[in-house]
Length: 285
Image 1: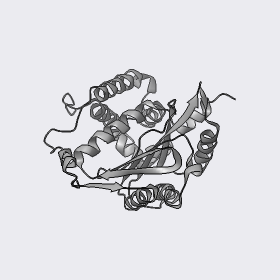
Image 2: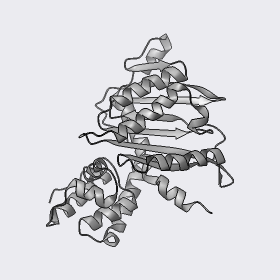
Image 3: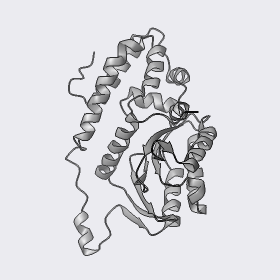
Image 4: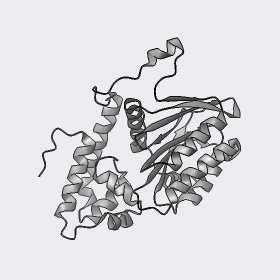
């Protein structure tokens, strides 16, 4: 068996799952595992290769498909999740060998290498949609605003949201994955009516797309959150909004260290959040 002592917790856990798969005499394919887990083939691949930590729901389905007993894996799964969360809180950074972003260039008003600034809603969403259409394997996005997308949409933003779903649903031989974190505003434990209505519609529109997953974060701040789109491991778009419903601008960065920080932050959130389906099932009434 491969020595995993020097791996991080997510990589060690993935190695244990791969060992369980090797021990299974039927050697189930990724397609077979994806059908058992009711998820995309790319999601199974990322779990087994240590690029994604599974939810407990997916964990149970995967272990059962591999001939194991979920109860035997519960403590291992919890322990690995705690380690991942602790590593995130400790601020583990990508390897120090990567050169830092030269933010001191801002003082002289220079344009930073790999950074593009967008002055308004249209510029930001047009650029993001173009990069989405050219994505290779993975898109990670967040949406945390006080208004649902159908109340804030410009033509450019509508096209961006459409591009993300069309990319996930495209008939392709590539291993594709879209993960979206949706912040649902709430006050005194009650979700915002308009955002919740959009969330229900969105679930209905996307539940049949195997390459698309959504999770929900309960959002109690009376302000928009920082929203991002991480495309493959190449570019991060950060959006800033507030005030009027259409006001939004931001920037994008193509730099491995910058991308690594935001990817780690996204994955830390993802592990801790319920799926959109689970969130809706747990709502009272």
